[in-house]
Length: 624
Ligand SMILES: Cc1ncc(C[n+]2csc(CCOP(=O)(O)OP(=O)(O)O)c2C)c(N)n1
Ligand SMILES: CC(=O)[C@@H](O)[C@H](O)COP(=O)(O)O
Ligand SMILES: [Mg+2]
Image (cartoon, rainbow, N blue to C red):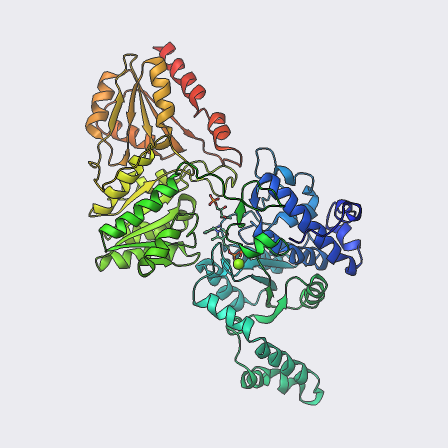
């Protein structure tokens, strides 16, 4: 473990309140700042939890960018933003870092409202080049003379959006700097042909040197300068092939050592005022400087609290969470049905596919950060008789939305979406809440949408999706549920059939979709309300709804989704379509971003905990 500096030496970081303070330091002091920063990140994140390994790898790069550029006037656009902790420390948020991702503390990602240094809000990957290009083009039109830089990882570069932006930037010749932070890792090992290409660039730096040598050589031949400028590309091409980035219209520089902060500053100073699109290829190590994270960057990508002296330790095996249930189910499904194929867009660990990938490598596809491709790939596989399962977080499925409609649902293909992290995810905050999927999925024709109330039901719903003729989605939350045992068979559920858990006498029926069922049951017991586990968001159990609407004075729908267009809206639409107007109260999330904090606190804040639901139902009972 490299935890180098002694307390008495720690004077530099605490003296930096903003990047101006950093820029006043002599260049040769930056390595010491980097060391302190690294120590501080390990100490702080070990107490708060959060994203660690990417940030450790980007310490020197962050310092160098703020040192060489004139932030916040110059724009730094971070990709994903999970590596931004050093940036937050340098930009006036050092003392708040211990509360990162907690309610009232700083967000875990750059947020425009949080600081003028957070040039662009982020959390989902591969947006940085597009956003920085937009800024650069606006700058060109407005004449502000600010520099714009996108800092993107090798994983982030695998996404279509990033490649679309490179394609555009190279064409419009914007004054844009793209810094490629290449650590050869996504969350897991980076994948794909582009990743292999970057590795070749790293292993063949000689080619880059030959190219630079050719350029320098030609620059110093004044009489033939113009000819040389025009033929430079050809001569270099003889010496070494152009990089892909040059073919796309970028000037390519690198690879350079991303942990040599002084060298980085010099390179950035050279590049910062050159015109046109430039790409600086920086080589870093994920987890740099903290040995356990360097050795196991996957585990240290995102961490909960740990003792830095010991590193992450394996605790006693916890109760299975929903991801574990999916993990077991998909292995079981693959054993019983050889048509099963699993696809992840770069979330092997988070989606519970590690064991599956080990056991069924031929039927496992990590496609990189490529949600759109993941969905359409599944569609293609389904066309040929496979039973594809796309394991995807609710928030990231947003990026593959057109593909769900156009490539899967309209073609009536049997793709199963295992939608993890549905509902409140907690610490990752507004960019990652899985609170839209019920609204955006239930409007898609012929898509069956299921929301389990416990782990066994999740298993059964996955089994149901696997045997349906059309597309389906099972959306389940982050973390554990209320159940214990899992089924040991693959019996499906009857589609569109809800389960009445309790018949009450109060005239109120609580219709719970998914994870809020236990809350509904507790309140139902207290206030003698009918309680239904709705199970299916689409198709709804229409017969049951007709009965309850006839018998009850008031219906209450509960869902961990935005109210707008959600499951409760589906209930209201159905009843109104048949001319039934029993009053309905919708409990769910508001039409506003839900920020970071503990899931239970957020639920309570929005009246979705037991007290909140009780208050609502009591209010209804008093009215009647
Ligand atoms: C659209 C989208 N899909 C998936 C993710 C989850 N995710 C967060 S970081 C990450 C890996 C990013 O790799 P890279 O850009 O190389 O950054 P590194 O962590 O290596 O620094 C992934 C897949 C995301 N944030 N956004
Ligand atoms: C930055 C990012 O998008 C992921 O690292 C995400 O934070 C993972 O979330 P989970 O911790 O829920 O897997
Ligand atoms: Mg990477």
